[in-house]
Length: 355
Image (cartoon, rainbow, N blue to C red; front, side, top):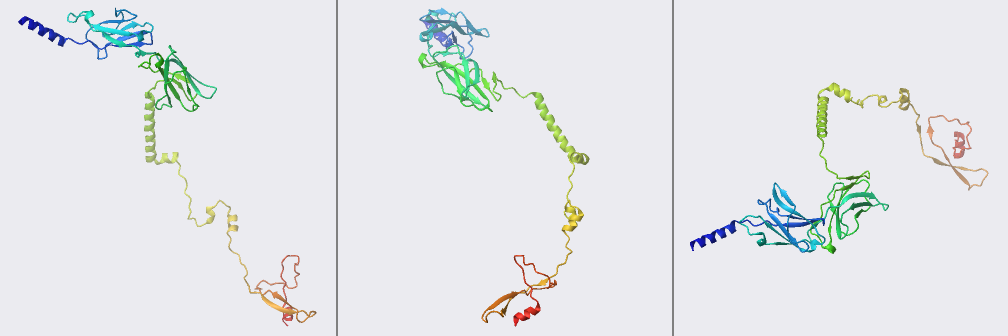
């Protein structure tokens, strides 16, 4: 009775200490191979034996293991047409005596329909179309039941992802700027019509269309060369030293930056302000001249009668009462051709008119 209890205790203790088999994840690679991995929680410490079976492929032990540091972490199997629509079963067995035999290890069922990962597109090219748009083209190994997703960025800005579409292997950028740089990448997967996959392919290598309308592939950002940084530092130091020398050495400062003459605005002679000849300035600014003044008085009306006319007819005339110091010659003939002229009346005539 005692021995039975001890045996039961060791059996239960052995089950507790026994390690559970790691999870297995299977993925169909481009409909060419089937890859199952069990290192998702880390590299296992036991070299497991991988067993699998399906409807079209009977039970078999892995023939091609994937290893890491001498430890098995995965298995690669051939893919059979339409195998992803069938149920797929796997199990791991470490072969230790403590573990049950292979036929008693539980199986794990896998649904491969959504576990397909296609290869990324290749041979991306770009060209200017006759419609003034920018056209991108690429190649892919599988062309049916495939949807594409494009991401593009302009002048190294953030990526802009286009809507998912199922169609030709091309993308159109409407009316691109001739001074901008465009970079484009593509990825693909199966669409709903053929059992949509959960996994996108990796992004393709970028294709670039730039300022000079050339195409460049596999663009990588390069760091600034060391000699360029050294050149910047030396130039800055040289500039600082030059400023210090100019501030402390007056002779070099005068040679490099000659001073400008300051005009003397308080010169007593106005001739120094202008670049005119002295004779011209004296003629322009000569104020030594005299002018005679004359007294101006108002015009007074003077009446006179015409001896040949009637007594009631009287004519009225005006006399110039201006008394100027400039002598006026009485006998000088008058210029009657001028539109306006003045008649000068002598003193005798003035007395006769006044009578």
